[in-house]
Amino acid sequence: MVGIGVVGLKGVAAVLAVAAVVCCATAMAGDMIQDLKVGHLIGGTPWKMEVAEIISTVVVSFVLVFPIIILHEGNIAAGGIGIGDTALPAPQAD
Image (cartoon, rainbow, N blue to C red):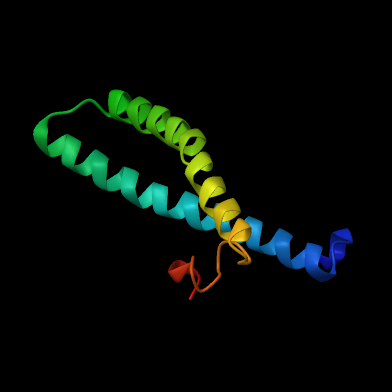
């Protein structure tokens, strides 16, 4: 990030964002390959399975934004710092 001029807290946020995208993409690839394996064993068609995975990923990505925002803002309204506070921990970040 230093090479493109992003330093300090913005640099940390940028690195975490890139790492999160890579992590999610890797996890989804692993899930999809398992789904394709099971689909092959039970006689499913790969292209239909891939279309279903893509549609569900897009829908869930948009739907889950709202509960996360509600939890984050609710914790801030209660005097916390949002996600990562002791009342609203982010255990996956440990």
